Length: 249
Ligand code: BV8
Ligand code: ZN
Image (cartoon, rainbow, N blue to C red):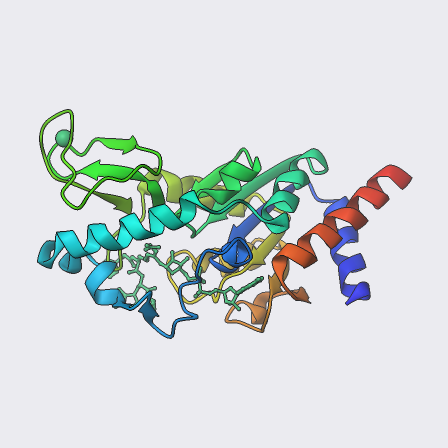
């Protein structure tokens, strides 16, 4: 692994623009359950019941109870050394963009400044009537929250299955990948599209692809460098080597 870590640090030491594409695995060491570990069941719920528009239409109270549970969990966790290392990249590389599938906000809490939340945010609600999107922190919202502006029903501002990703956010993420020279894919099984399509896009524009994961994934075929291990351990090691390279120049 040392050789691969040195290769990754060397690649990053000459990078102009790095995109970090993250999934649930980067938050696992913070205590946020990953999506697929529970073999399709998510904290006891079927995906269809809690992460689709049909599920919400069918039983909004159940979906709000599910998301309030995840908001409560995220309120109790902190970023891990993997999030911190990603934030530290910004002091070592000209331009760093984070495109995350995660909805926990931990990259922002850790200090990353350019973060595209492709699948929305647990902190945000969207009004079904006036469509206002509001960051309401992680306070308890109950199961039938009402829009203070118009009295309409609120939903989590989360991208459910079979829903479009936020257009502007997606456009910024695609543009960032198109202009990057190194693409780090960390903590994702690379199963969910269109987000996972960013990996082949990075490859197609000639970026060096570095994967950080516990195991090989659907992304591994695109990776030039594979770093196997917990991201909370691997990423700080890469940053430490990069820092040594930057100071020895
Ligand atoms: C769309 C929000 C256009 C919810 C999420 C049939 C009909 C219709 C659509 C489809 C279809 N078939 C496929 C699709 C498209 C579908 C899709 O991709 N499905 C997949 C399952 C096949 N996509 C969509 O529906 C998207 N919208 O396509 O709209 C459209 C419109 C109409 C009709 C057709 C198309 C919307 C996708 C967004 C769904 N919302 N999240 C919420 O979070 O509450 S996705 C959900 O999965 C999470 O966001 C999660 O992040 C994401 C991906 O999972 P991962 O992050 O990769 O997490 P996972 O657990 O899978 O993996 C964890 C990884 O970490 C593992 O590799 C593990 O080894 C690693 N790991 C663990 N610990 C560590 C670690 N690595 C390092 N260190 C560690 N310590
Ligand atoms: Zn409203």
